[in-house]
Amino acid sequence: MPQGAPGPRIPRQRQEADAGLGPAPGLRQAYVDAFDESEGSGERPGTDESGTEDAEKGKGAKGRAFTGIAAAAVTTVLAVVVAGQVAAGRHDATAQTQSAAGGGLDARASASPGDTGSTPSVTPSTTPLTYDEKMGVRYPLSATLKASGKFDAVPGFDKAPGKGQKYTYRVDVEKGLGLDAALFAQAVQKTLNDKRSWAHNGARTFERISSGTPDFVITLASPGTTAEWCAKSGLDTTEDNVSCDSASTERVMINAYRWAQGSKTYGDAIHPYRQMLINHEVGHRLGYGHVTCNKDGELAPVMQQQTKFLDHDGIHCRANPWPYPGS
Image 1 (tube, rainbow, N blue to C red):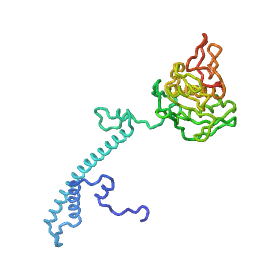
Image 2: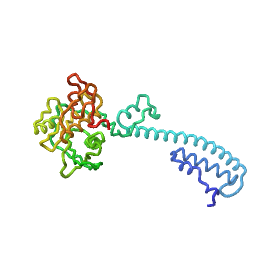
Image 3: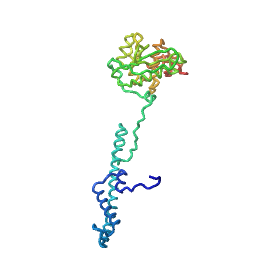
Image 4: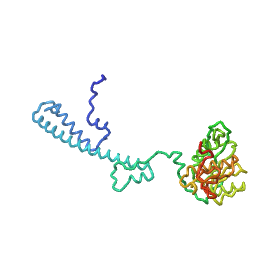
């Protein structure tokens, strides 16, 4: 067809169907009948079925044409109203489905009393939490929990990013904790390879494996299971519900209660507290012992027992999660 030439004439009822309104039973047929009768009368005025001319019949046909056109107009208005109501119903159903898919409090907030189906004022958020946001959230976990005592290795591999002395480690999480194992593994890798951590100045680099024989296993375990493994190395973690490096075993034990809830010494700063837990216990595995700050107002060394105290002998130490905090 040449560009700009008009297309084939489409009957009016097909145009409306193509526009997505769909047929309106009963009303649609009345419109078609009225339109066909008026259109036929206009093309063949005064002509009966035998082909003879009849002035009176022509007048009757014109009357019927006018009546048909009026009926078609009324029918068209009714069809538009009905189609609009159907479309509105579909819109409301879609909005309700989308709101329910958002879940949680947002979905309930949008279904307030007197809701007329308009756009809800609260839009559900589908943006996942970032690593930093997750690390800043406390999680419920009992201080006296004794879980299964069985561990799952967190699957995956995180390559050592540096050129220093390489240490391989595996991350195990006790079954039944209900904590985010992948987040814990991510935190260990990020923390240990931070330039403020034991990887300082490229001296060391840490690589996470999930199979084979690692240099040590960083283990997230319930307080009861932590105490059992620490006792194997002559350490008592029950008094202050702390973590330990069980040096006579392969396991560096991170107490899941402390990981989930933090400590009074760090208050709401749960993210840096978790970094301190990792650095402190791995520091023991690397051969470092306990020390304290010597002057009032100094940063506490990462090897200070910061879960237990920041102040000692009249000296106030400031919380610090890093072996090399000034880097």
